[in-house]
Structure formats: C-alpha cells, structure tokens
View 1: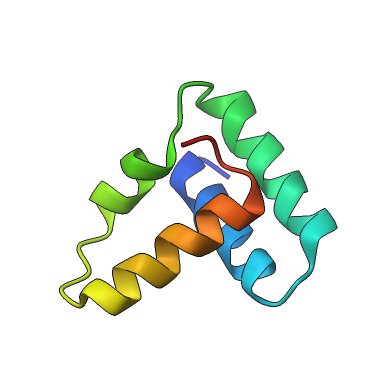
View 2: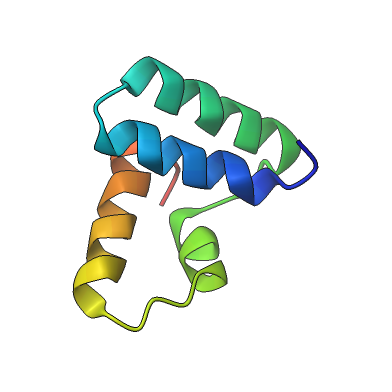
Length: 68
C-alpha cells in the first residue's frame, strides 16, 4: 500500500468493529511508513463537517492505538 493514511483509516474501521488485532496491525504498518503519525494528522486529512462524526473518528483512531 503506497498511502500510509489508508492504514490509519483501516485501523479505525477495525477498532470500530472490535477487531483489535487487525487494528493494531494496521497501526504498526502506518507507523513503519510514517513514524511521526498522530491522530490529529489523520483527522486533518479528512474534512468532516459534522463535529459528532469527527469525534467518532478521533475516538476510533485513539482506540486503535494511534498516538495522540
């Protein structure tokens, strides 16, 4: 996968459905390609207009284990 951000998105999806082993694996792949990746970096890429959706996404990223 050439786009490290996709690992972050997959990690969020896996965390949302409580497949934490897969979520952690995606976080590791993300951090291998972009060691300085943080939750705020990933949130800035996706421009949610709805604060509730933004809060949900932030929560799934944190749950997945992406550094804050």
